[in-house]
Length: 98
Image 1 (tube, rainbow, N blue to C red):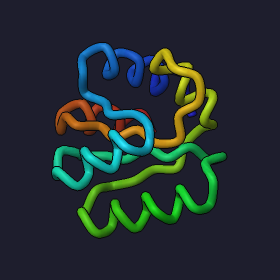
Image 2 (image 1 turned 90 degrees about the horizontal axis):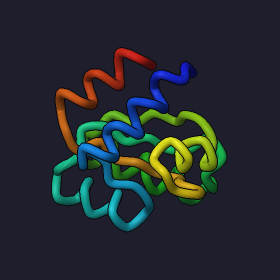
Image 3 (image 1 turned 30 degrees about the horizontal axis):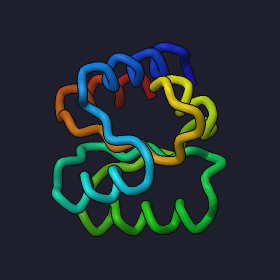
């Protein structure tokens, strides 16, 4: 994974395109506001299966990338297991970096 991806996450957070953490992520997905779901590689198996099921149910692309620490630091937080991208053009830009 390149550093540009993580830098882009930080920019997305500042722009208000991301929902981070379990509850905000679930809310964004259920309200059909998400275009892409990012799950940390070291998230618990329970969290991974819950969010993968949600992403399939609501037809959102999901990616398992990076650590909770890396995802968290990229958006100015400590540890983050899940991030939902809530802007279509922005999610397309992130996909190109994957």
